[in-house]
Every structure is written in structure tokens, then in C-alpha cells.
View 1 (cartoon, rainbow, N blue to C red):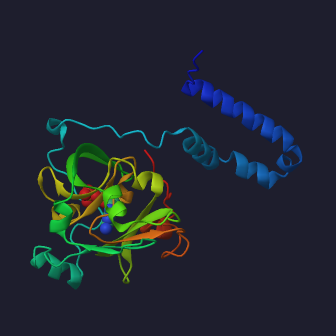
View 2: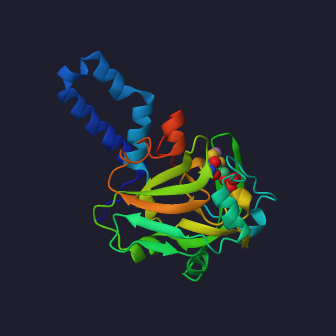
View 3: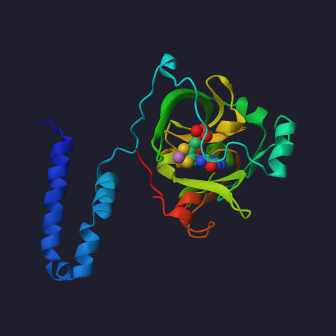
Length: 254
Ligand SMILES: Nc1nc2c(c(=O)[nH]1)N[C@H]1C(S)=C(S)[C@@H](COP(=O)(O)O)O[C@H]1N2
Ligand SMILES: [Mo]
């Protein structure tokens, strides 16, 4: 006998168990605040997304001829820090990707070293919350290969990307993802867009592509990857620049 669990049956099943659970929590549920928190649209959405979404599923890939003619830039498109300008003038030969935190072997990788590692090419659609999308072809090193090289600890829970651009007042852009996304096959450190070196506009010399996520997770101008067990100790504590300053959702899955 074989069992095929359809998505619908899973949803129905989960909803039924939630109902049983909630009936048991009747006294608790009579508390107005608890009820509001449980049934807020945001929490329901989060709960459904977290429990049902197949986190290993691949994002759709497109054919190269489906690419957008121009992959526009957004957010920082020309970092104005002296550090960045100096690196750019030297064609990023002096740039290093630092990898540290919960690792046995901290790394400082040059662009040449990254380019000599096995890489992946993927044509995907980028979706920005500001209401635009673009399809581009990215080439880069799968993040899991870099993490393997650094020998990350079993305590590692999140990967934080620190960037070279200053968003004002010395606050660099940063973002983070969890280990499921870090090990996802389409999560790459991209050094090329549409088979050309990554333009400054789109994050030269290295940017993240985590294809199951919205645009703001795709950190550009990466200089440092930090492996951590907790996001609370990093910067504003919410896991990303926009999460800290504007309340964007940390989990921006699509
Ligand atoms: N370092 C850095 N990364 C960033 C941003 C930024 O301002 N700085 N903007 C984010 C946002 S909101 C989007 S939509 C994408 C834009 O990528 P693009 O410039 O290649 O279109 O980069 C993301 N990564
Ligand atoms: Mo965005």
C-alpha cells in the first residue's frame, strides 16, 4: 500500500490538528490578546508558509533569451565609500571575502580564488518589494562550498552578509539567511551577470543570489560573511538593514 500525501490533504490535516489543539487551549483562547495574536493574518500566513512550504524546492529558471534587456539597479548603485572606490580602482584585486564566526577555518578569499571554484549558472527572476522584477543570468560559487571550506560549526544557524556600502551614518547594508537557504543549491555568491563581470550597479565584485527570496535579501558588495548561532547580537538584531530600520520581514520567501 502506498500513501500519497497531497498538499490539500496535508492542509486539511494540519487545520484539523490545529483545531483540536485550540479546543484544548480553550481557556487560553478566551484571553482576547492570545486570540488576536494567534489569528492575526500575519501569524497565520507565517505559520502556513513555514509549515507547508517546501524549503528545498527550486526557484523557476528561465532561458537566456527570456532575460530582461536591462537588469536595473536598486538601493545602492554606486557605493561612495573611499574603501570601495579604492578597491574598484584596483579592479578588486585587493578585495577579499572574509569568512569567520562559527568556523574552524576562517577564510580570506580573493576574487580569483572564488572564480576558480566550481560554479553554477542560473537564469532567474528577481522580485523587488517596490514593484518591479527582472530576469538575469547569474554565475557564482554555491555558498555551501565556501561554508564547507570554512568548516562551519554544528552550532551555526544563520549566515550574515556584511556589505561595503554605507547606508548613512556609517551603517553598512547587511542581510542574513538561515542554514536551509544557505545550503540551497540555487544560493550562490555571484560574480557575473549575463556572462559579464558583475557591474558596480548590481553589486561588484560579489553579491548574494538566494533565489527563493525577495530582492532586499540579495546582498550586494559583500565583504564579509559571518556565521552565527543567533541574530540578536548582530547590528540591530533583526537580521538585516531594512528589517532593523523599516520593519521588513526577515523571512522574505517567494
Ligand atoms: N549592499 C546592498 N545590497 C542590496 C541593496 C543595497 O542597497 N545595498 N538593495 C537591495 C534591494 S532592495 C534590491 S531590490 C536588490 C537590487 O539589486 P540590483 O541593484 O542588482 O537590481 O539589491 C538588494 N541588495
Ligand atoms: Mo528591493
